[in-house]
Image 1 (cartoon, rainbow, N blue to C red):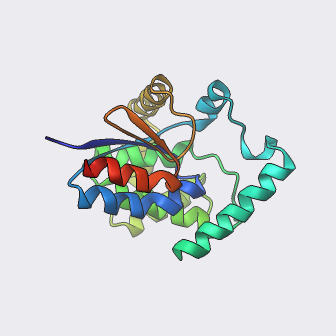
Image 2 (cartoon, rainbow, N blue to C red; image 1 turned 120 degrees about the vertical axis):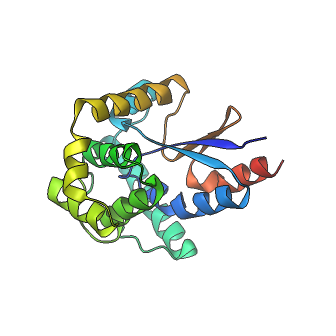
Image 3 (spheres, rainbow, N blue to C red; image 1 turned 135 degrees about the vertical axis):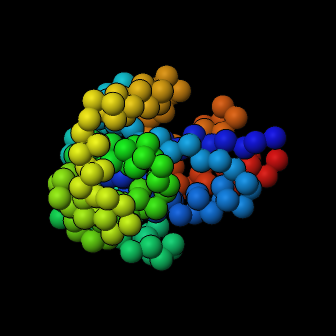
Amino acid sequence: MSKDVAYYYTPASPWTYLGHQRFEAIAQRHGATIHYKPVDYGKIFPLSGGLPLGKRAPQRQAYRLAELKRWRDFLGVPLTLQPKYHPVASDLAAQLIIAAEHAGAQPGPLSLALMRACWAEDRNISDAETLAAVATEQGLDGVKLVASARTPEIVMLYEALTRDAIDRQVFGAPFFIYKDEPFWGQDRLDFLDRALAR
């Protein structure tokens, strides 16, 4: 019986970045198929009670930084707590991932590279030239992919994935759904691991 995990995320999320490689390793260990679904949290948050970072209460913002530091140090993942280009518009970066998969590339490595660019390399993942460079560094045709990412077809796929996320009650990133059971956050990966083992 196949094991399929829907993976909703945005490359602008530090929590997705912290959990991305661990999640892929868990899925591989269990022979699970990952369905990569970059989505627009700018549309999801207003429907789910979430707030963009800049509109959160100061105490919540401060605690977020404390937690990011804890997890960064615990996992040994390079992460800048307050990168130069964040908050950042991530629509084009998300569409780039979709365009890459649409062209036959594996979305996982590019997703990680984009997250690393934002969270460890202080690069602007809303900038088309930066996106093209990151994709090229992954052995892809970056310029062609950026052009593809802007096409109506890819934009429509991005919107469809976002509607799918809304329909499935997704509200944060990363968000995993396995056999209709939701798991929110990289700190829930142990629970997903156990679910996949059943």
